[in-house]
Image (tube, rainbow, N blue to C red; front, side, top):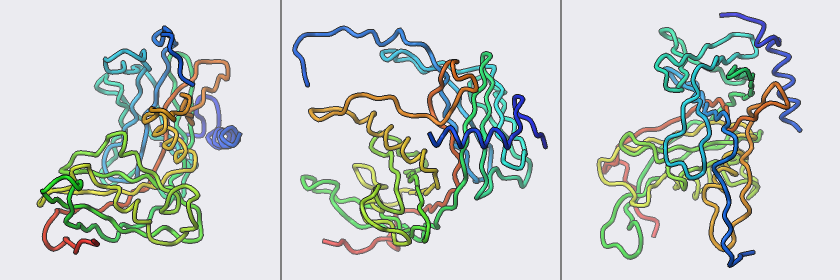
Length: 306
């Protein structure tokens, strides 16, 4: 469906405006802090890819720090995603769960590499938007395993996985690596893994080279894999602001101990059109995806490097 207006703005003007805005000791005495009285905010979990099938944007409301219940769904929103050619995709919460879904027609796939995408949300009288770009992603060449002990104290052995991919040359690239074991995503806080040119941020000049070994072997659970496990690895292209969002998210989630840094808000790329209106949290991104899925079997076992 074609349309040149989103909430009263032309698509191109909103994209340009968004790009401009995006450029811009211990104590012994107990202290009681009320962490439940802050205002509830709209939370966006929207990550769209060029993979076949429906795409989902999840909207919830933030809850109190000590509230153990699931965050309440944000219902009744109008949600669209437009590309820079003004093609509009409507996301609908048909089940009343806060999951706003776009369902493709037969043969249709969301997203094209190189295109910018604008998220528009109208919710409780407020209008929010965010912008992301779908960048290219390298192919995963192979996925192999080595027999190792999960830790030196164990007698049993298991299989450590390692994937091989080469960073795209002559450009700066940012990636997000996701792993699935027997169909279940490894989604612990330690599994948030992003990469800069196939390495860690600023660690070396790795442009165009193989992903470094610590990145390649980051796909393992603590217990490693067993024979006949199904393993799937995905590499997703992300934008620089998404890369730093994940870095800060990981820092805040895993923040603790003697040398913990002061808590800080994780930045968002979602902006309220009304600068004095309520802010949102979360992130909107689009990614191209490269994936490799195999079973742990003898043909993929390589000799240990010990």
